[in-house]
Amino acid sequence: MKQQSNVKQIARQRIQILFEQAKKVAKADPKLAAQYVLSARKIAMAAKTRLPVEFRRETCKECNAMFVQGVNCRVRIKQKREPHVVVTCLNCGNQTRIMFREKKEKRELEQDNYSNEASC
Ligand SMILES: [Zn+2]
Image (cartoon, rainbow, N blue to C red; front, side, top):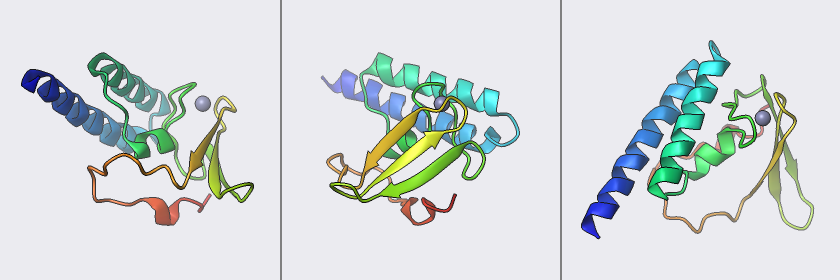
């Protein structure tokens, strides 16, 4: 049991590193960023761990694009039924819906990127 949680911990660290890298190169090299995103996804799958919320918010699950605000994504806030954000990937056209109440998971990270969410 102990070993398994270790695997997950390592996986999560790696995902975080890949995510940071993807963010860094997203503007200069979107293809490389997508590769990082894909790798992170594979690690998550292999370790059977979930991707962080911000990862799901800022990447496209269809084409693995790393979203750059105002460049390859469109963010809209909708109020239908309950408030949610719709992120459209301008690379492949896929839409991701993010519910505000999606906070069942424990927050491992203190950072909160919500404030500039609707800026593009
Ligand atoms: Zn996409």
